[in-house]
Amino acid sequence: MSEPLTIAVSKGRVLKDTLPLLAAAGIELAENPEESRRLILSTRGGQVRILQVRTSDVPTYVEHGAAHLGIVGKDVLLEHDGSSLYEPLDLDLAHCRLMVARPVGAERPARRLRVATKFIASARRHYAAQGIQVELIKLYGSVELGPLVGLSDEIVDLVDTGNTLRANGLEPVETVADISARLVVNKAAMKTRYREIRSIVDAMGRVVRERAADRADTAEGTA
Ligand code: AMP
Image (cartoon, rainbow, N blue to C red; front, side):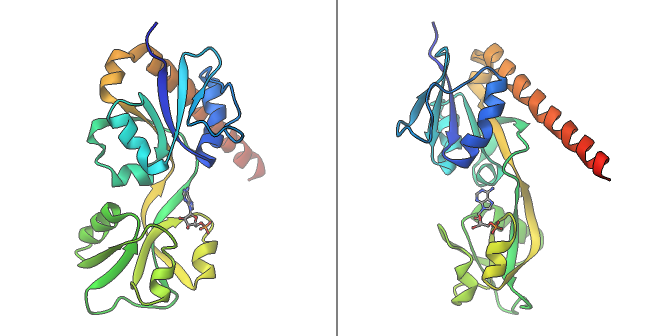
């Protein structure tokens, strides 16, 4: 028998939200990820295993073939040179927006703009497309602090409810990208394990479409 098909998933919320989609493809964990400290999770039947990895590492595992498939936010893919991965499915999960934000009421200064962000590549593309010269300052967390302490004029960060921005006196001013979780596939594996991968992509895609149709029905019912 060939080695188990391996799927790298970011730990925590994305893994939890993805389990029903994986179940539709016949992939059910043999252990509870919240109780297990193991980084390789086995599944019933044993033909598939799940790697729990840090979200920004998912593309690296898939690109190098250590995982055949991966589940990861579009924000991470935008920072990664994605040319070596297929991205066959938007999972329509973990929605948020990558946005530019700045202190409420502030205007852009005449000098070169300073922008704090975890998302250097996305921010660089966004400002370059507008012809705005920026100094990008890489932070790894609590990015909203940047403008409050004079480190930066603006930030580029993920926004869900907007509560974190509001709590820190910031307002969103531009959308850089709409974000959701995506299924990615190693290009070589797409050829060598085609049937298994195709059946997973198709089964997950069916659930994603059914959910979207249910939501549209509910919206129509309440309109
Ligand atoms: P919120 O206050 O709901 O707008 O959430 C903003 C905070 O949550 C920021 O610090 C973001 O970095 C983080 N965040 C929001 N959505 C996501 C997501 N889908 N994935 C990872 N982090 C997120």
